[in-house]
Image (cartoon, rainbow, N blue to C red; front, side):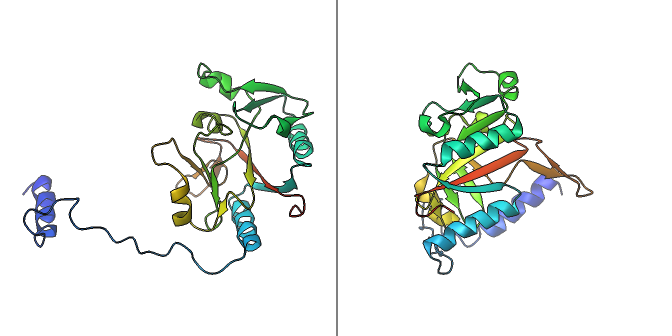
Length: 219
């Protein structure tokens, strides 16, 4: 008996109790799983996001709109960044007074040109607290997905609490499945068979997340 026969035999046995004429779109699939896990205040949800982001080795900062340009400027200066890649729809006030050369996100940009950029600054679509995950959907303030995969340093601004949800089921209705989604949980990393962690293999080695709150909520 060939491997093909074995596989087909298992498929037939699995389908043995399916009524004749019933197709994949037949019985509705139950979607009654829990969307919310436990009870948390808005502040606790944001704190959980910050904790899980840090657990994934992202660097987390908190500020308000007034302090954002200065914080971004200090973070770029600390890295010695001279060029900053920005999406076309990014709020220009975020980089006001920043002493770097802005690089526009162009369709004609090559991977080599992207690799030469020191840092990239984006917003996000939604952030999941329970998993410490940022979801980008190529919106105007996020740009093409490749700009967050090639440069070595990614600064991502998350508006809190508006862009923060507790769970993945809560996040899914807020993103369109037909858009190029990028799910980011910490800086790019992988491990070999010896469990030696290597960062920056298929994305930025450094992920810094700025939780942008209203002035009275910033810490």
